[in-house]
Length: 289
Image: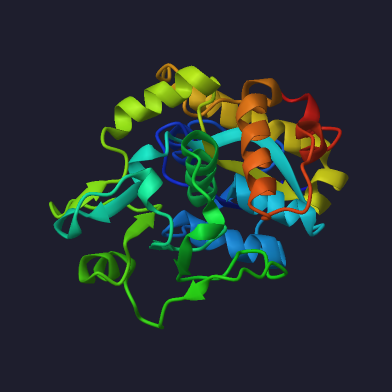
């Protein structure tokens, strides 16, 4: 019998390259890699249509998908993790502003439901006392989860978020970086702020993990375990990660970070209630470490 061929979307990260190059294989299945640029463009068809067997997915997208009973199962395998403080910028030509100056301002973000946006809003609200409801949010895309409706202002079709910032149509932008010298970090020293935040919370923010379809997980838990093993082996072959590890594997290694983003997502009404971390996994993936 031929091995099943699993349609797979994963970003081109160093710790995934050994797997993508075919250096690591399984006797249980073959992987057919589907290219999406940017990778987050695959999240919507995965949530709405289960278009792939295996797919990278932002954690907030998954939390929202879980809240709306989408047939997806989470694997505790991080594809992307990063400190978030560098992804908030403003136009320095229009004066200096900091996190506490956002009240009453127009702040742009690609979509209100991005994971980076949820992390930064959580930091603003919980570490700087910013009232998120006092900010005028301007967005450019809808949510990956069709059932979610936000109440933000939608930018006109064809508008560019960075150009709007430069033009003065926005006061700040979350989730973006720019090499334009006019654009400055909302946090005066984002690297130092990130280190202080890490010392306080003991959390390295996770952005993207991996999901599989509920159908695959239900029919072939052995394949799901094997997918995780290959991802973990690929990471090991790629070399020792930095400390703290930006791409931790395993439920326990990710527990604190996932707990915190669940809290932020609930605070921001992206999900209707706070999940327990163990609720995000099924009987197979809950045991992966």
